[in-house]
Length: 167
Image (cartoon, rainbow, N blue to C red; front, side):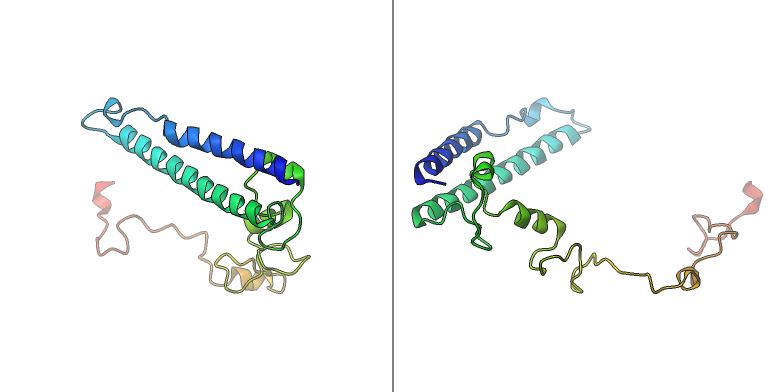
C-alpha cells in the first residue's frame, strides 16, 4: 500500500478512536441502575465499561505501532513474517499486523507450528489434542464406573449418614 492511502487510513482510525475514547462507553450512570439490594446491573455496567475502555486502549496502542511502522517504511507487512498484507485487509482494518493466514493460525493455537500442521500439537499446550486411535475400546472403558450402580447421594461420602426413615 502506498504511503498516502495508508496515512489517510491511519488518520481516519485515529479520529475514530479519539471520538470513542472521548465519548466513553456510553454506559448509563451506575446510580441509575439497580436498587440498594441488588446492584448486579451497576456491576455489569461497570465491568462492561472497563472492558470497552481496555479494548479501546489496546486499539490505541495498535494505532501507535502502525504509525511507527508507517514512519519506518514497514507498514503493510506482517510483523511476524514480513509478508505483504493485502490492501483489502488494511482497508478493512488499518491496524492489521498479520496476514489473514497468520491471524487465523494464532486463533487456532497453531502459532509457530510448521506449515501444513493443523490443530494443537505442542506437548506443552494445555489442551493438546490426543490421538487415541491406538487405544482399544476395552482400554477406554477400563476404570469407568458401572452405569448400573446408583449415583451417590449428596450426603454420601461426606461423613453424613442417610436416614431412610425420612423417605
